[in-house]
Length: 130
Image (cartoon, rainbow, N blue to C red):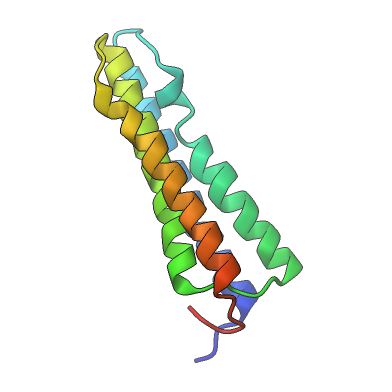
């Protein structure tokens, strides 16, 4: 069964939309039971997969852009997930009123993964991979 490039981009966008909905629901539930202590990191964690995942993938689908290497997509998606989980982790720390130096690893690791996705995507363009 042959899958068009547009369909693959739309499936990627749909996966990111599911992730955004999951983290929006997680944030809403967590905030509901947080005893009126809020964290913007928790509330807006859903925006990362929405802005970094759904938006670019939907635009690529509309433009019919060629697919990058499978590894580039994996790095990009892993970077989005790392930044999102880091945001949730920071939100949990804020709500509990504590700090941890490990939270700073998430933005660095997420940025490295996103950059790796960009580099692999630029180096290994393929018409019909994935």
